[in-house]
Image (cartoon, rainbow, N blue to C red; front, top):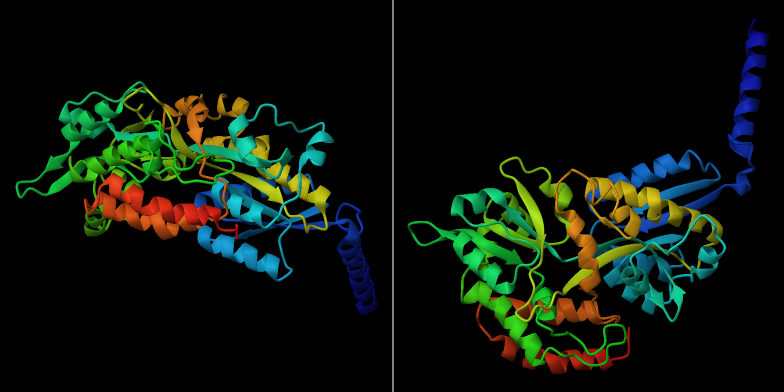
Length: 433
């Protein structure tokens, strides 16, 4: 009996070792490619991405995907660059339109044109052109866009509008309409303290662009800052006036005193009636139980100009990968149709593929926000951040801190512009890091 048991155990061990060596699909161990994917994002994104890969892996046992998430964009950038410097980069990297600029300056990514041209199952013809162009330099495509993200959403609280007797905004509204509604929606208590603000936005760029102003002379190849352009100054001053002159937006001190985090929390708690941001806020806002809400397109400027900043993201293949073909298959899994559909259904991202964005998973979806289809029109009016590797440093070190002074009324938009323009010009002329 014991000898028989031993023989059975030996057979089981042989079978087990065969599976380990040759793989459950009869493949040799060396045929299985291990692809590391570095990315950052919210817990909703992590959940969705894991789901996409888990489903995809069932049909691709020859590729093992290791998802490596880093919380926070700054941590992600530094960690990825450290890995590159240390000779241990991933195979595939996630890149938002802003941080792509920094990665591209380091020449990290592989040109994807050869893959696209030789893959009959993949095409970029249906993708929104602007986001494809953002990941293209000198004719070479370095990332497959997963989504686009105009800063064009103005979320509005229908209950607060109804209580104030204010009509809901529509896509053809203007700055004047925004100001009028913001004033009517702002509420103060008996002590004179503001308990509901009419509007909040941290996207100052929208007011510059929709007034015909610019941040730099050429977004794709910036050489000169144009903050001191009269149209830019005028747009900035109107933005600042919402905080200082009209008191319909919470300034940095108000935000700190309320201790509610960002604008999304202010909106969710009914402390701000209208909130300007991107569609990525949707998964969190869908948890609201206290009131109904929707979105409308950011208003036109005083001369009818429609324009706003934008985000978006793509997956890129590192030049150093030992498995470029397998990496391409993983990029397609994350950025092609199935991946975009899952993101769309969660409301987390507007698909970069126009057909999906216009279809039942996005524009035709009955889930909130109901008016998200307007973003398919909004992509026509987007302006990307300047394509310069020092721009993030310019934003963090100079623009953002100085904006606090502007929004607190400690300086005018003209003073803001003339103070920062020469500093930014030097940064633009400095050799790109």
